[in-house]
Length: 147
Image 1: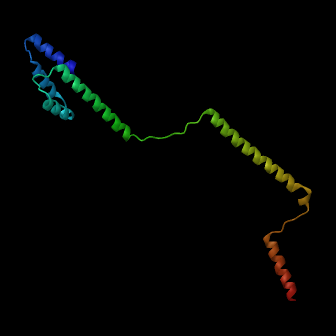
Image 2 (image 1 turned 60 degrees about the vertical axis):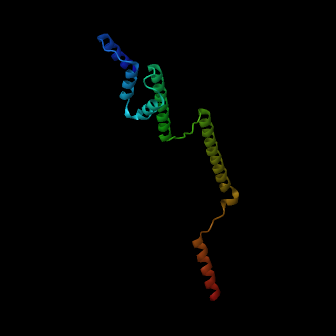
Image 3 (image 1 turned 120 degrees about the vertical axis):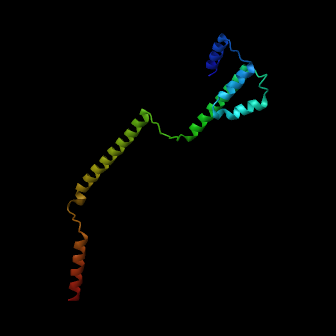
């Protein structure tokens, strides 16, 4: 913005129109947008605009602009939701897969051993009775006693 203003003023000086330093300062302050109103008011009250050099005004406005940008950035950062993601490395994934594979292998081994045990001599001749069969035997044994 300052370079554009300087180019316009230099062009006018070539054409014969010159401005005092205080007039340039006032024109810059009037051209600022409304969000800069607080800074303009502070500069007008704190400093004598007739003696304020352009370089000091430009420096003051640039620091204010930097502070505005920081505040806007902080406001945007607060509004953003942060999401925490769990990162895993390939090694961790491999370890997890190995654990699952080992658990699967252990389960298969236990199942095979249980089947062998059930097929063994101890269980070969046995027949397990269901609850229905037990209730029939009990009712028939009660009937025998009554006779």
